[in-house]
Amino acid sequence: MTDRKTAEVISLGCRLNISESEQIKAMISDEGDMVVINSCAVTSEAVRQTRQAIRKARKARPDARLMVTGCAADIEREQLGAMPEVDGLIANTAKLDPRAWNLPSGPTPIVASRTRAFIAVQNGCDHACTFCVIPQGRGTSRSMPITDILREVEKHLEHGAPEIVLTGVDVTSWGHDLPDTPPLGAMVETVLKTFPQLQRLRMSSLDGIEVDPLLEELFAQEQRLMPHLHLSLQHGHDLILKRMKRRHLRADAIALVERLKARRPEIAIGADLIAGFPTEDEAMHRDNLSIIDACDIVHGHIFPYSPRPNTPAARMPQLDRSIIKDRAADLRARVADRRKTWLESLLGSPLSILAERDGTGYAPNFARVSVPDGTAPGTILAVTPQQIDKGLLR
Image (cartoon, rainbow, N blue to C red; front, side, top):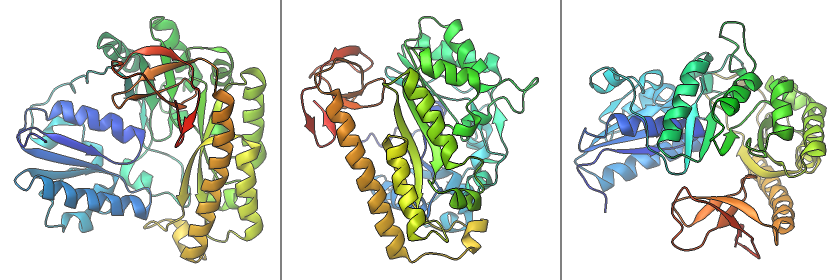
């Protein structure tokens, strides 16, 4: 049962939110009976889940001070602020500032980690994808200077984190606002060279068209950089990509995956895909389905399109919700088929697993694997899976 005098942070949405939630929790740990909802607004469903989380938290802790931050706290500010369960809103851009929580100013406490540590190396976005509301909640792109990144990595390693995850809103734009505009690959190489004791480095979602040559080289041959590339792909048809105002074509994504798999066959590909974008016809949907096979996507994040406030796509001709729902189901089924074949290919081969707190762990390729009972979180161990049970290697 939750201690009603302990501050709690409930995180929704992306890995960046997870990273920020850990920092918020460390910052407010002495604030007593408080619940913070770190919200998401990427889709209308994410906003619905945020509202649901607020109501659930209030029911569980009726006497707590309930605060809401995150993207929805900015984008849906009026609606969330009107909820009777909510005591206050903290602007998304201010949520890591102690002064926003009426705390003394000072550095954000380091979060002790025994498994994966998330470091937000970048925030915000300078692009204007026609479907995306996140720049409204995150602002323009800002990069963490390399010296600060190295300091963060060092602190997490000192606290025992065996894996570091570099995350952000648009990670591949890291460095564009820094002196001399260093590429992301240069930063990743510096982290790996500076910390030979770092066992595993993982990248969060990347824009494939901005993967620079050095980063591609590192993915191809650096064993400590995990063979797991998650692409901000969004669609498999060029005209829809153009209407989304994406900067890549279908062929660009396929070529990147082919180059990497030719040099590092074990690399596992993930991708974000949107179903039912405005104007999408059946042929376009088929192209969206076929890119799952063309890029061998085994980690798929499927988003049914939903119009977001003040975005150009919301003013385009919309598809019927039932069509969007059916197409999202098609995409999920195709990814599930691809993933099943991939998991079967891993049976009987030893995998290096980082144990989590729930009795499972993650292989370098991000396959989820059951670990022996009693395995301490943060332990890296060799496991040879023999069967698949509900998508979990055992």
